[in-house]
Image (cartoon, rainbow, N blue to C red; front, side, top):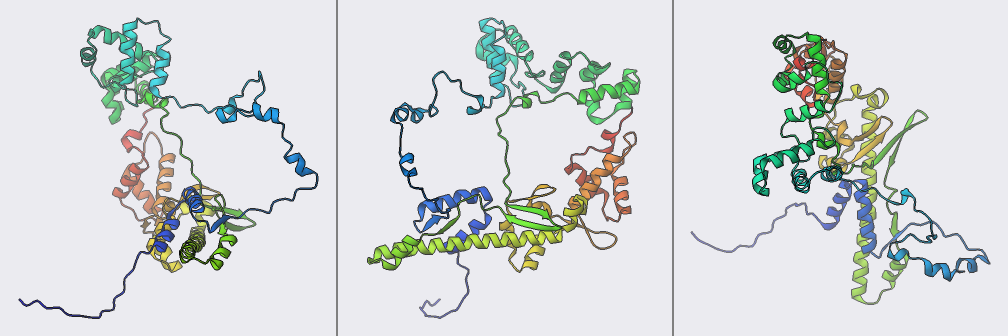
Length: 458
């Protein structure tokens, strides 16, 4: 095999991911709150950017002295730098609005209740150990014998401490399984219906399978009494610890786009006005034109190009979001006027073809963003759903079909609920071509139990 060198000239096309293009794609993908943080960071790093602020009101003659007339005695009494509120009056009680309530966990709530119980020191210490070993649902998975071995105490002491923990609120906490949890809740109530104790102790698995007639036959009770007992048991809390555990803070959604109806027309507003409004700094721009040193001129030129590209990318992001929202608003006009059942099937490719942009651009523009409408706040992906064939050939959205399925279940006769096959046949008579398997899949996604579990016998 012969090796030799050669020189060739080839012309090829390549897509290079430049820093400017990467910044534009990043801005397009950022939600509103993350965009605000990004612009704040850019404002601090780039001297070519400045905030657009309103003109300062002129100070009238004679007011300037009043602005700088400082009461030095009050100034030195201010101790806000050490954490105290400014201008704190002597003897004044602080209001509750100045404090933020700390979120307490399940263990903290239970330990607070435990301190109020008249327990011996050794039993209280074991009970505190048990509380620390509860999971977030309030269950104890560690055997009592194992706890006794680790703490080097008697198992009877551990059982006494466990009984103290199980007597705390909420009822059912400290249970070792679901049956014990439900029994603890029944013992704490006075309105327990007949047969509830018997069902929880021996036939809990029959309740899960919905075998109410067989359960009534085994118990020798009236089927109506068994149904009332089962309904009461289903109203108990299977995870009592979740009612006290507040570890996860609530999530707040800041919509990126707002759609309003005014005068029979729709108004689209891009919610980017909450962040800093940036513009080019004229002072540094003049310095760029008059700079003498090559190094200083290069620095200012790079910052100027970066700022200019940032402002162009922001405008491009705003325009892209507006165009996509305008298309969705026009395409899903029936949804905004009548409701979820009239949501039309839509794909990202449809939006890209209509607006003559790439699918990846549409996907980045809608990723993690929300739109506020008169019907509520929705994620942009909510308007994109699969297409189901209809009799007239127009197609139906899977989201709209799920809404119709949910309404059919809500209107059904509880004593004779509709099976998946009957639901499929009902939707087919409404003009939607759907199979029983698809109905079962949608029903599970909506967390609707099957017909056997939905049936009521009284």
